[in-house]
Each structure stands twice: as C-alpha cells, then as structure tokens.
Length: 310
Image (cartoon, rainbow, N blue to C red; front, side, top):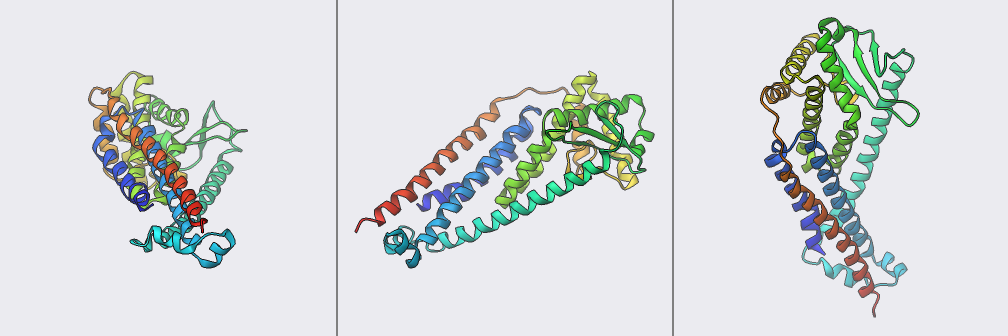
C-alpha cells in the first residue's frame, strides 16, 4: 500500500505545485483560478483520504483492535513493515488536518457573520453598500441563501475616485461575486491547510481571481487601460491610507501582497491572450489521483480480508 502514500500524499501535491508554477499565467484568466483551485482541492482531498486509510491501518495493527475485527494484526503490520512509520504518521496527520480545517471553517464563519452584521442595516444602492470609513477599502461580501451578495465600499475610496474609476472598481468586485471567487479562494486555503505544500498554490489562486475580475471589468467597460489605471490608483491610495482592503479575508480589488498590483496592472496593459490547452494537465492529474485513491481504499479492504483468513 505504500505506493499510494508515495503518490497521493507526496508526489501529487508537488506536481500540482509544479504545474501551477509553470502554467498558471499561461491559462486564460477566467479559467485559471477554477482549474488550479480545484486541482489543489482534489489533490488535498486525495491526500487526506489516503492519510485516513493509513490511519485506519495503524489502528488495525493494534492487537486489541484486531481481536475485535477478527483479523491478524501481524498480517496488517507486514504490509508496511519496510516503512513502519507511515501508518502512525498518517494517523497523526489526519487528526491534525481535521482539527485545523475545523478551526479554519469556524473562523471564516465567524468573520463572515461579523462582516454581514456591519452592513446588513445599511441601505444598499443596487448591490453596492457604502460604509462611513476614512480608510480606502473595497471588497465583495458573498451572500447566503436568504441574502444577496454585496459590494462594500468605504467613503474613503469614494472620495478619491472619479466616476469612471468607481465604475471600474465596482465592476471588478461584481465579477468576484459573479465568479464565486470567495469560494475558490476559501477551498484552496482549506486544501493548503490539509497539505502545506499547496500554500503557494493558494496564494496563486488568490492572485488569479484578481486577474479574472480585472479582465471581467475590462470587458464590461471596454477599456483595459482605464481599468488598469483605476486599480493602480486605488491600490496606491489604499496603501497610503493604511487601509489596504484585506477586509474579512475576501477577494478585493485592492487586497494584494506587495508587488501583485503592479503585475495586474502590467497584464492589463497588453492584449488579452486566449489559451486553454494548459488546463488539460492539471485536470488529468486530478482524475488520476482520484482513481488511485479509490484503489487505496480498496487495497485496505483487501488487506483486512486477507488478514481475516486463518
């Protein structure tokens, strides 16, 4: 069974990381975040399932558990005798993943609830809500089943933008809501929590959703250079005000690590490229690791069945 651990837990996440590094910027901006987000999620899920399977094997090696299950603990142990540390490590890792992901889910739920509480009493103008705050901030607040998504702007950002720049920023945030980008960012962060090798992929997806929203805004306004100038100007003003829009950990026009906004502006200043073929490799990798994971589960079943023969 060790080959499953080597492929799904070690090799696949590294291949997803490598594939993201080599091809993320070559894929169409509207397609790239979905391809790499779901590739990371599938890789992390496959890794976690394999960890759980090996964790169950670690439990099955305990004589008391084997007695209850009516199988031979020695037979189960012999399957990974050349790598005796794998089952124990997998059990600890799987438990750590469950705790970390649970804590992350609870923290996100609490933050979103607080964010909605801040704006739900305000009167929206369409899908836009204005918050009285001198900081320069703008972000997309996802909706729930009973509440639509909202675009949140502070009075600080409205004061420094002209009408066309406001339209560009709002179009950018509206693209985040339409593309469900907050879900992609969140799921990729969960994947990275489950497998730390995927953290660079999570950061890349956070950048790619900004690029996708930039391109959507450029299409809506019909002027790529105008969108580039609006985003660059707003980001510079946000940095000076100390209110760069990292609000609530959500995708935002201004919320980016140092150096990211210049890259986005630069990308908007050149003609848009249309490429899809690079999406094939991560999709095939995701399908392959899912099939391999099902085989790992089946192998555990076969091992326990073999151990039950006396």
